[in-house]
Amino acid sequence: MDRNSITRYFDEQVSSREYWKKRNWYYHKVVENLVSFLVPPSGSVLEIGSGVGDLLSVLKANHSVGIDLSSKMVEVAKKKHPECEFRVMDAEEMEFSETFDYIVLSDLLGHLADVEKVFHNLKKVSHSKTRVIITYYNYAWEPILRLAETLGLKAKQPLQHWLSEKDIENLLYLAGFEVVKRDKKMLLPFYIPWVTAFTNRIIANLPLINRLCLIQYFVARPIDQGSRSCSVSVIIPARNEKGNIEQALRRMPYLGTECEIIFVEGHSTDATFEEINRVAKLFEKNFKISVLSQEGRGKGDAVRKGFAKASGDILMILDADLTVPPEELGKFYEALCSGKCDFANGSRLIYPMEKEAMRFFNVLGNKFFSLMFSWLLGQRIKDTLCGTKVLFREDYEKIIKGRAYFGDFDPFGDFDLLFGAAKLNLKIMEIPVHYKARTYGTTQIERWKHGWLLLKMCVFAARKLK
Image (cartoon, rainbow, N blue to C red; front, side, top):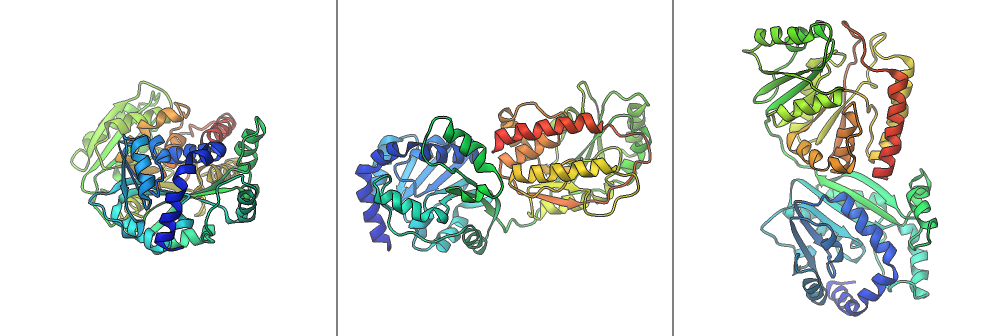
């Protein structure tokens, strides 16, 4: 259909829009909940194909703008949702003098005459941190949806594009965007008490069965981020690591425009605190060094304390046991500054390990949790338990704001960051590291106790993320 035909179609739909939304309320509610989950209640949002504005209004952004071809749809939207801004505009000829944090295209792609051109136009309203949210129906459902239209169960639609998951991903890539998250939702698009909730929350998330779901969604980010220079804060939690402290600084590369080292000592019994202070004076001309004493317990608490003190643009975690060599932090810095990712996670499961660096059952546990978290986060994660994690401070501040969604559940700190990054749709990339055996002290990890705790966190995350 051409632009004029599409405009006439939606102008004619205005009068019956409310009727069909009430009739298929469950479907619309799921889409609203899904997009609300993907778009935090802050920042700025542009919805393309906003219709009467119902979806845009539930996102609770600081600045909400909707555009639509249909002047009649826009007229209704302005009356229903005066808190949002609506304009009559063609997505293929889009012109704005501003950029947006989130761009939403929900149930729209099939009505666009030139999908690739619209995707190219998204660059005009994007900045380096923009996320594009797309929902579209799974084309395997086309015969069922056509039957529903024939039976009067849903509004009749004009013939739409046949866009598979790979087609959408390819068109985004051609326009300069990469998909960072994708998934499918909803096996039952209508409400049956108990049955629908169980089917869509449990059955629909199972591997293979998930491919049959009605709704497919994508989260994409601009590819051409550009390189930049950043300051760095390296957080080193240390408990009973006296023998490693001097080597940590002696082997530490100077990273970025300014390199800050923050030690967080956690109730050591081997004079680690005294050693940190001695070494800090020794290297005070090499780095900006801070020494903190931990009041709470656990690595997660230590990391948060260090991050709160940090002033760098990039935040890094380096375990004081030095099983991940400090020399390899430069790879993490380059990955973020080049725009290849937003969150860099170390992976110990690629290069051969030194003897005794990781015990057999720890390796098995890591591989199991790798599969679990890749499924949970919608991005490939091979090593969830590597202590070296690196992210931008501005993104960490957003994780803090959204922390109430997950709660204070993680004594390690790794999963608080991974879950928060996934919730913000950050591009997570794994950086291979050469995992070394300890040369001093003993591990702080209790294999079976902490393994059980991790398993419980997987169940917790499934409820929150799936």
